[in-house]
Image (cartoon, rainbow over all chains, first blue to last red; front, side, top):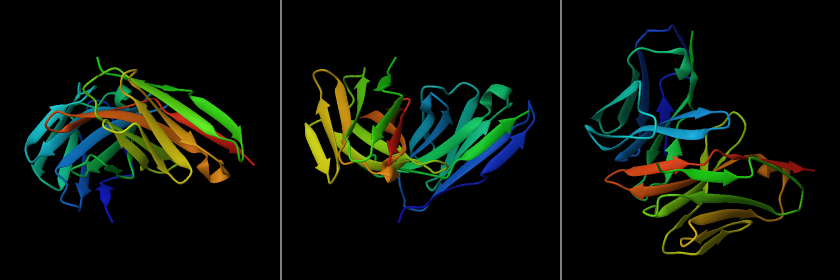
Length: 111
Length: 113
C-alpha cells in the first residue's frame, strides 16, 4: 500500500518567513508533485520532479522552489511567504504509469 | 497555455440516477486522462483513468469516454449512491520527461437519498 506523508497538517507562518513543506513516499516512485488547492480552482501544479535533483516548473512556480535530494523526499520551499500563498498544499507520488497517490495535505496560513 | 475545463461545477442528482461530468483539454500532446474523487476533508484518490489509445473504459458503475479529435473526455456514474457524493477532478497529462498533469477545477456531486 502506497504511503505518502507530509510533514505538517496545519502550519501558520508570518509574512516574509521562509517555509519548508516536506513530502515523503515509501514506494520508490521516481515521479513526485506539488500542487496547491484553492476553492473553485482545483489543483494547480507548482513543480514536479521525475528523478533525484531533477525538477520541472508547473503552472504556478512563482514564489516557490523545490528540492529533491533523495528519491523518497520532495520538499517545497516558500522563500518569503506572502498572504496569497495561504492555501492547502498537496504532495503526490506517481507510478511509472502516472497513477498519482496524494498525501494528506498541509493547510498553510500566512498572516 | 495548457488548460482543462470541467463542467458542471456543481451537480445534484437523485439516488439511482446517472451523473455525467465533462472535461475538455487544450494540449493535443496529452495522452493520459485520470479521474480523482475527493471526499470532504480527505485526499484525492484515483478512481478510473483512460489512455489515448482507448475510447472507453468501464469499472462497475463508473465509465470514462475519450474523444481525442474533439479533445473531450467524460465521466459517467450510473445508479448513483449517497456515498458517491464528493468532488470529482478530471486531469490531462503528458510525458515531458516527467508527467506534467493539469487538473480541472472540480465538480461537486450531491446524491440525494
